[in-house]
Image (cartoon, rainbow over all chains, first blue to last red; front, side):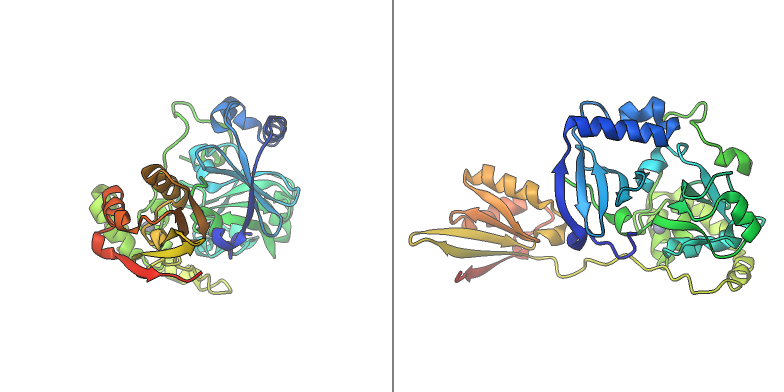
Length: 182
Length: 176
Ligand SMILES: [Zn+2]
């Protein structure tokens, strides 16, 4: 999603959000991420005014008044946290762990292949298909990517071939490198 | 910590959030991922200066990378990780003057981007300083209403010490 993304070329406009829209986003986020409940007032303070950065390819990014990038999505999909946000609250997404050998591929923007999730160094959480997950790595503490499952965990184990997680956002991609938006 | 614990959802007891992850000053990733960065040596130099204790740990880990290499070759594709785009054009600020109407002129400042300066903040600053209109007009361009070029040579280095007076170049009058 952000492999070739460059804020200079891909941002089309910045919108101030009405408070009613902000409220709706909060509700949506809590629905998707119930573990955020006790933290939502810190992540998205009620009084803060949020903005949405509209980018090419129907990508939208939620930004708070400090300019920090919080959540993103493409078209009308579910809002996904940026890695910088997830690193601050590394518990509100289901997590899949890839083995060591897969790390360099994920960091180059590749989707996660099933074998990278079924080998001895890997570990999955039981989730259905189309779930937003944090991609963790064998022997590492922090998430290296945010993705969406292309298959349920059961099917990944069974099929063990092809794409298991679609890589949406990874360390050092265009979104990661985007500076705070003033 | 077991893998199961690591992947469990929900906040952990005894940890206060938000957590602060240490990012590398060279590759910008959490430092545990530096080893995957193509310019790992530069990361190590950064670590050595800024986080000596982490640097010591890395040195020990470097002694047995052989196994890792074997594993890698089983997979298809190259898994090439690109280095960050460098913004290392010459660091220089350019000032020029352009006519505005018959009598007035404006001052155009470009190149502040190369010093990582927030243009909006800079435009606002000039506006306040010279009590005149000042706005961001392009990717790396600020237009100040009025002829303030002489003042800029003093004001810019004062506000941003990293910009020496010698790094500001006057391009003369522009025809618009
Ligand atoms: Zn590094």
